[in-house]
Amino acid sequence: MKIDHLGIAVRSIEGSLAFYRDGLGLELDCIETVADQGARVALLSVGESRIELLEPVSEESVVGRFLAKRGEGLHHICYEVEDLTGKLEELRSRGARVLDGYPRRGAEGKLVAFLHPASANGVLVELSEKPKHEKENT
Image (cartoon, rainbow, N blue to C red):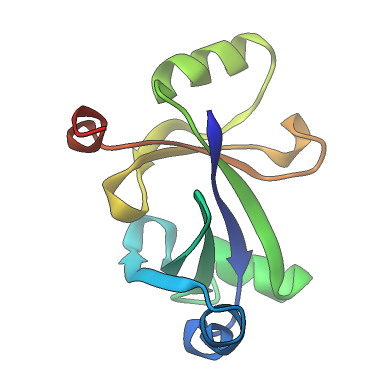
């Protein structure tokens, strides 16, 4: 297991790139819309991990509501796991609350699931699993 990325809620990806890409010199890997999560995401490499900038596509999206309530800032931490379904079963058996109750497709086609912040000391945790074709190539 490793930290895949840190998710940061922003009002504007383009405006935020001035700091992360231009100021810090992080490499922009891609920008895509994840319709299922109601967000545009920009992924920037930093060592073996990445920063994920999350821009809401609407004020009613999860990220839109987060920004309205808390403003810009750290949204979640994502851990990459080998077997997402198995890890979710293990965490459920230990009392963790899984949001939505099942994995779904996230950015870059990865399977993702979120754990309620109450299960992780107030931190929203995302778990992700590489797509099968990426696992076979590593």
